[in-house]
Image (cartoon, rainbow, N blue to C red; front, side, top):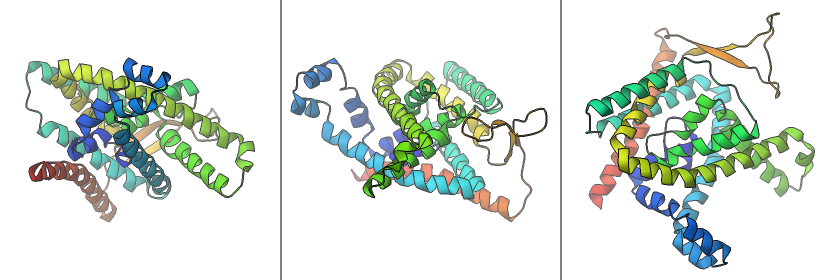
Length: 319
């Protein structure tokens, strides 16, 4: 589930759903309420742990943290050296997520169709807007933490994909996570020189704020989304399907990055000496051997998501 949350286009909620523990996950999160708070602050820690289904949540989140670190290092390497191939895989996974949601949706009517169209219009509009630039303002990072966990609470909705739209995917899910991993390595080797590294400490602070936002968002949104889905389930799913479909242009693999320039033609840099992206020039590729490889990778991405769905159905049949 942690690996799925890391990859744009794949929802951790989908993994929980097809593996058969989605309802247990949401039910456990809803236990973080006034009663659990009273148990905790009165010192009844054992009762608190049992009330929130602590064993289940602990094992789940430990597994997610381990996978988060391993996938982060891998993505860091692949994005630098094989960017076109990685975005092709992400593109395929998002298509797979769209197919996954559409194929089981049986409640089409005028209202749900209208919501889907609204979602598509919003998604397409976002796709062709100037992409957000990376922003490490702590309040914005906190907001990113809140919205990034929606994919865990809502199957089919990728939180990491939203971070791409917000411009902070690399900062929060690659750079910051890798910095924390490096911190553990430094401490294990008895090297504390990272404390004097301002950029290193800034990334740790960014990750801490992002994590706090994620925790608060996960608990809050589990209540809000459950309320909305109970009362407006079909309309909500139709809106999400349309939004994801319309947003495919964001991760279209074949595009050239256009950087902001000053009046002298020099590329502008942000506070971290990174080139500031202004927009993307999308194009259709020539038909060659590389294009064939990329199309195959897109098909693999689709197959990964639909394979999870197939596994979930087989598992239910066996049970």
